[in-house]
Image (cartoon, rainbow, N blue to C red; front, side, top):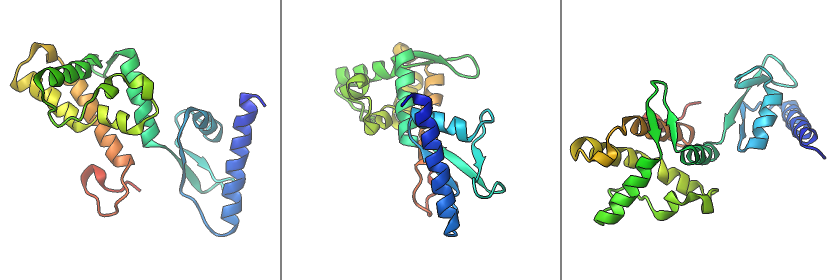
Length: 194
């Protein structure tokens, strides 16, 4: 079976499942997608560019939301960030993987960990690219805070111009908190968003 046939098969399975469950009186507000093959599935379910909902197969007035799995998206973000080395933000500033490498080397050389939990496996991530915890350890707020401190407070030249990288990491930390929220009593970015 070719790739497109598999996508259509998955699409039909999702539509059939939604319809069968709808017949019992249960309406799912959304589906969660975890990987690239499901991204193609979403493209079939949501044919309009960048649309995040699709009509329910049994009742087109009901919209089904498509939510990407945040843990998988963190792995993809880390892989993209590390593989390209340099990305540009909306202001045209450089977001550099080099700063995370430099932070790891600084901590190793100074015998500190600066509360970042950065390890060799985070820097040499390719051997364990599917480990969610490594992706999350690479882009947490503590890494952003450590980079910020080394740049501003210590004025370490190795970390000059890391502001865009710090902002990038903080954005991903907030996104992770939002999409990984499980506690109805959570606050700030850890509060439920639905």
